[in-house]
Structures are given as structure tokens and as C-alpha cells.
Length: 285
Image (cartoon, rainbow, N blue to C red; front, side, top):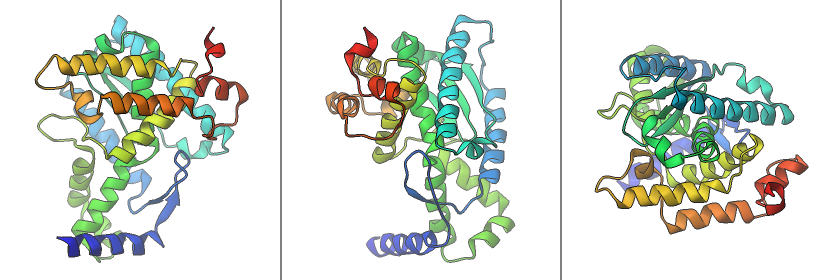
């Protein structure tokens, strides 16, 4: 098993030399074996399939209105951030869409291309727009940071080994589809996204709070939200779906607080946004 893991790591490192890009959000070098066009096309198909088999809340309802209002402000914040970075072209193929699904599950997710779903079961826990922005900002960051795409790339290397990857992808659309479903969790018995690695969750927390602040919401609401989520988890044998993939304990809350308090984090250039993001109380008085 160790030899296989080492071989995979070496292969990833080799491929990375010729098939990598730098992610605008994280600044990290990432594998780019599958084209964005292919992933976005597959995501769009899977998103439509999901909506067709689940109860979508009508736009005129108060729940959908809240989700749309907050979601659109997060999207506007994302667009502004990319524009200020001179990277707006990276969002050209994004076709943003927000839907609220009637379900008891406390869950939310965002697929590649900006395909957002929020379950009504999480709204009693968010309770307000700021907490809802924390949730949507977190999930949108997963998509922008290409966390699922990276998992798909690694799965691709593991399954196809040293084959010519471009040829394999061109000749095996069924396998490519299966890899997408495996990476994102779609098609599983629960029909929801799979949990991400802890390092991916930390990045989604960090930059999700940034988008929350840029959208004009108090990112400190993340602390209260996770406290409520922790209470909801404690009262049930099976934790809410969102909590099961995002640890809601004292360490998580402390980590969120450290992100907001750390004035050494230089990830945004707007002076007012710095004031908001770094948690200076005067910004909210």
C-alpha cells in the first residue's frame, strides 16, 4: 500500500510539472488534467438532474428569497474580487445559479460553475443573513478553489496510471463521468457532495469569511453559527449533513476566531474590507 501511495505521489509530481495552473483564490499550484469546459459541462448536467429529482422551493417563498438575496451578494463579492485581481476572465464560463431545496437535511453545496444549492433544513440554524452568507461563502470557495477538481485529478491518475491522460479522457467519457461523480459525491445514495479534506475545509473557512465580509456581512457571525450547529449536533445521534462534513467543535470555533483576529493575513487590498475582515469591532458599531 505504501509503495502504491509513493508511486501515485511521484506520478502526481511528474504530471504537475507539465499540467499545472495557479489558483487565484489560494495562490497554490494545482493539477489541471481535465479541462474546465468538460467539468463545467458535466456539472451543469448533474445539477439539472439533481433539481429534477428534488423539491425546489419556488422563488416567491421567504426561504428562497433569503437564499437568493444572500447568494447574489456573495456572487457579486466574488466577481468584484476577481475583477480587482485582474482575473475576471476566469469566471467567464461560470453560469451562476442558486436554488433552495426543501429537505430536513442541514446542508448546502456549490458545484463547479457556480451551481449552488441550499437545503431548507439549514435555515433554522443559520437564522440570519450573515450566517447564511458564511455557509454560502464557504461552499462557493470550495468551487473556486477547485477542491473537487483536484480530487478528480488525483483519482484520474490513480485509475489511469501512466497512460496518456489526454488520450484516456478523449476515449473514455464514461470513465470521466464516473470520476466526476466519485470526486463530487453525486450519484451516491444521499445525492449530496462528499466531504472535503481538512486542509480544503480550512481554506473554505478562510476565504469564505473573506467573501462574507466583502459582501457586507459580519464574518464574526460564523462563531455563533457553529455554536448553534454544535448544539444541533449534540441533540441528535446523527449529526446534520453539513456538520458531519465540517467539524463543529471548540477547535473549529477557535480556528475561525484566529482567522478573523490574524491581522498578518494579507489576502485583500481594500482598506475598508481589511477593517471588516479582521474583525475590528468599530466597523460594526
